[in-house]
Length: 142
Image 1 (cartoon, helix red, strand yellow):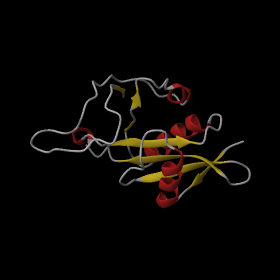
Image 2 (cartoon, helix red, strand yellow):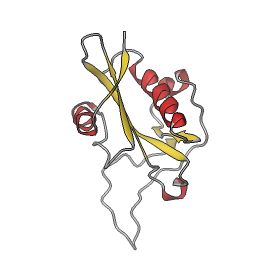
Image 3 (cartoon, one colour):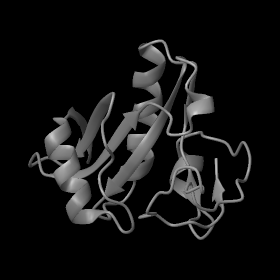
Image 4 (cartoon, helix red, strand yellow):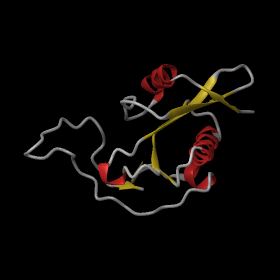
């Protein structure tokens, strides 16, 4: 049985560095939540921050920038649902996240989230501001 627990940003980021399949920890966070088992062992974390896309930074939208588990059953859906409850309690009107095309998104569906649209993917690098991409560049589901 999993329970929710607060977790320090540093500990959440260390968990992500150890367990996430394709991303490093994010740069920062508004808040982090952990899912722990009866022995207080962390089974997963969710990190909520400001939207990465600047056009979505309206003050009322937050983004799940990472959701990472060790594979414990239902941990991701519990964390996504908790993130929305916490964000809504803080006054946010919208909580978003992105999934890769090859991810099913079943944990989001189980938590009551819905698909808004499909992005075309690609690099954030432009000739006027070059960036070194360290993330998957394929299409994503918002």
